[in-house]
Length: 349
Ligand code: ADP
Ligand code: MG
Figure (cartoon, helix red, strand yellow):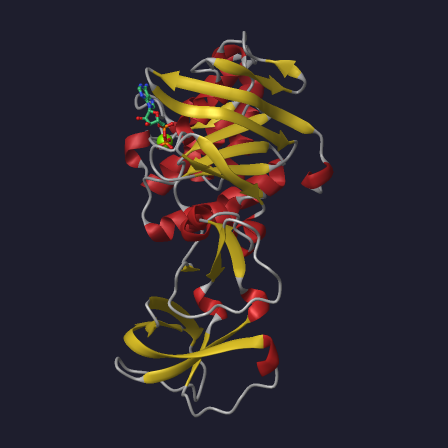
């Protein structure tokens, strides 16, 4: 389904949550569409978990309202809200087998034993844990426990799945594998999902849209592509990867269009090309800005090289794909840098 035209399932309407004098969430307005995978991304303390707890009904807003499928849920306690939840610590019941863990939400809903058993078997299959129904949680790996937690959240077919740093406890390889798994499950179940993470790569991988939060407020809401390519602020530019913020760079930045008021120029490291100063001009040189600089540092990272190049009073980060015949520049080397003027972005400082 194309989510951009799907109906709204969740609306935060000007929601504020205070803890004493700390506004954990301030004037949050946000719409989540049916079937969407929306991620709330931000550094630690930015209010992500609070936003999710508000949605789950574990904390109440001081101001504003939350509307789910057209109805205000302000007065609905969390146990009456139809939602599956997965937290960073999986919180499986340690004294119950995997199968019994999955059965629990169905039992709570008063489902008959025979139907519960069928559902549990089917779900174990869908998350590729057929063999493990009889195990205790302590006999599972971290990734397996995480999959059981996801399965338990999904088993009662809730219209809404809430995830708080669901892969935070896993090591890198397993995290990537589980990201693929979660994407697959989201595709298969089509369930509206709100996920919270501080990991930008995870957010980019999983999400239809991302909400970037900073100090309790939304900084920008957009698709992963747009957040990376057209960040609205220097905070978002830096949070969604590496950025060269050209604020008083010590050289003149060329533009095709006049920069909007109160913005600074920004260019992504992979948009800058590095070459020897003697290299012939490119065919599209008239669309490029070209400057010379001195290599300060080079880091080799598999298929990538990352340079730090001193230009004027700036240190520019340049990232290039290693291609056959491309020279390596050592610290101290004079180099020519160039980029398309149209690759320069303007961000609010
Ligand atoms: P995140 O999940 O993005 O790390 P949180 O939503 O947990 O952020 O916290 C946002 C802010 O609210 C932080 O400053 C945090 O210290 C504060 N906060 C969160 N929960 C509580 C609480 N129960 N009591 C007091 N302050 C809290
Ligand atoms: Mg948190």
